[in-house]
Image 1: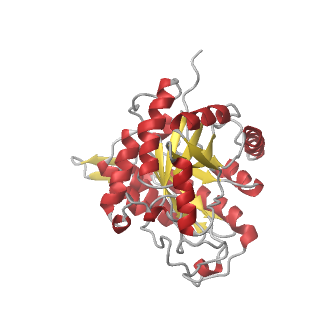
Image 2: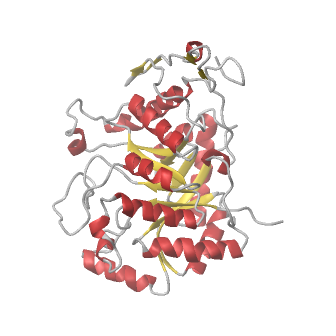
Image 3: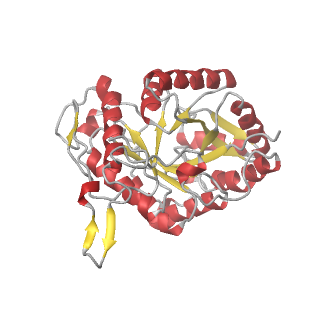
Length: 386
């Protein structure tokens, strides 16, 4: 029996995940805040048939510290808004999924709901999002509306995702009539108040944006510890994890499945990906060492770091997948060289082994992951849950 195909995602952030990547000869630091730069990267990912791209975002500048901004001037600082970048990329790509990060701690679920729904409409069913929390006082100070309680952030994020999902359902699929003859554009009976009342939000609805093409755009969560695994099992369709070996991957995957049962989602498909920072090519180790030297320290991210050839990476992915992972999100150490090594070397190697598809399907991003398009929970027909 042929082995199952792996899913592959790529995480884009600045000039790459290594802080000194912008100093590589083929980096484009002058273009980092241009639309053309991001379109070029997304089109390269699509040429490689990748499942989806994630775009990083935050409410404060990048930092080498965990507790707030630093004073470094030798690393990239500043970003474009991830959702707006995805919206710019959408009409210039056709198949690759677009998954921006959104910080939910200081943003309103109503705004997030219509932003991601809009991205799903303009990308014709290729949108997702990655909810993230912010515990930093320096980021809370941008808003000045409250003090953040770090131990409550994931519970608040779970409520945020739930409200976003309900707002997507607040328009039934056939709420738009568009009947010129009768002069009726909307069937008002098919727009619903969500009436969510929780500790952090009281949201009435309905949304002002029609139900997204996917019904429920993909929710992806980066989960690196037990609390985040619980949140991901409650809220996500796709979980990014950071196991360093097969045994750890098995433990994480099992923990997420246990939490999924406790969350009442045992019957739902939730995909678990492994994250790796990758430096690819025959000279990968020396390039990584040069970047570390430029930055003044070894780069030690939250995810494992891989250096080696595309064939060696394919070997590692093949082994890690035996732990139950359905795919991987690769973080290019330096762009464009490590991104093109993924699309032009790794993908053909996986295809040669029968582990990756050779063309795109024509369905939505949810369909690519085998996830059904759910009926609106408010619909009184077609499987809704009034």
